[in-house]
Figure 1 (tube, rainbow, N blue to C red):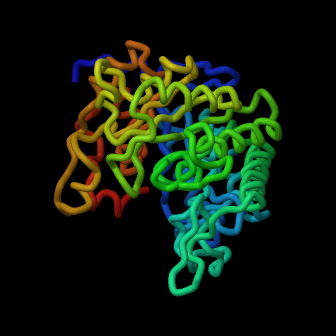
Figure 2 (figure 1 turned 90 degrees about the vertical axis):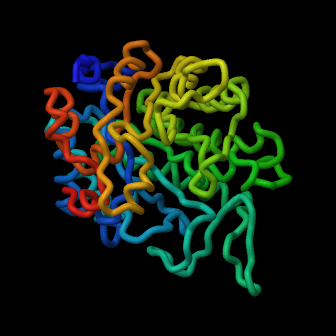
Length: 369
C-alpha cells in the first residue's frame, strides 16, 4: 500500500473539541449491556479502541428515559444511577488513553417491538399511529408526547455532560424516531410537525435547541443523519443539494456543531454533476465539521458477509478515502465494521500493516473483542 495515511493521524481542533486523530469509531449496536448497564467488558471494548489511535468514539445507541425509546434487548441506557456509573467508567477509561467520547442518544420510535424493556408493555411511539385488532401498536405522538421526548433528550444530554462525556450525538438517521419525522413516507401529519419539509424538520430542530440550552454554548452537539432508512435503502430525504442545504441550515442554526453524514458506501457521489459524497456536500453547504462513514475498509456490502458465512472482506478503500480527506471533502472518518472486528485497525493502517488487519466476516463478528 503506497498511499500516505499520515493525514488520518493528525491531531485536529474542531471548535472546542481537540482530537488526536481524524478516525472516529462509528456507533454500532452491540446488545451486551444486560439491564441497560455497561459492564467492565464494555469499558474494555471502548478503551481498547481509544488506545489504538481512534480520536473520537461515538458509542453504540444509548437509550433515553422515555417509555417508548428502546426497541432492542440489552442495549445501554443513559439514565439510572447504575447505568450512568457504568458510563462514567467507560468515559474515564477512554480519557486515560487520550481519546474523546460521545454517547449516541437514541429513540427508536415506531420500529419499537412490544416486550422490550425497561417498559415491556409500552407501545411504540411515532409521527403516525397504527392499531391492530383494536390494540395500539404505534401511538401517534401528541404534543405532550413530543414535549416529553424532547425533555428526555435534554436530560440525557445533561447527564452525559455531567459524567464527563466530551459531547453528544443525536441519532437522526436510519429510520428511527427523529428520522421518522423527517421522512415524508413515515410522516403524514397535518399539524405543525407534518406537511412541509420545514414542518417535518421541526421536531429535530426543537430537540437540538432544547439540548443546546441545557448543555450551554461550548459543549459539542453532533447530529447523525442519512438519506437511506432501514425500512428502505433507496429512500432519499433530499433530492437536490438545495433541499439538503435547507435542512442542514436549520439544524446548524438550532445548534449543531458537527454533522455525521451516514452513507452505506462513502465513495459514492450524492448528487449528479459532482463527485462529492454526502459528507462532502454537508461540509460545502454548512462549513461545519463533517464526518464521512460507509464501508470504510470493506470492498462490498455488509449483507453479503452475513448471508455468505465463509465470505471474507478485502481490506480496501483507504486510498480513495485519504485522497478525499486531503482534498478537504470532510474532516473526520468514521470506521464501523472494520474497527468492530479489529480493535487495532487504526494502528495497523498507520503502520502500513494491512496484511495483519482482521478481515471482516460473519465468523470474525462472532469472535470480536
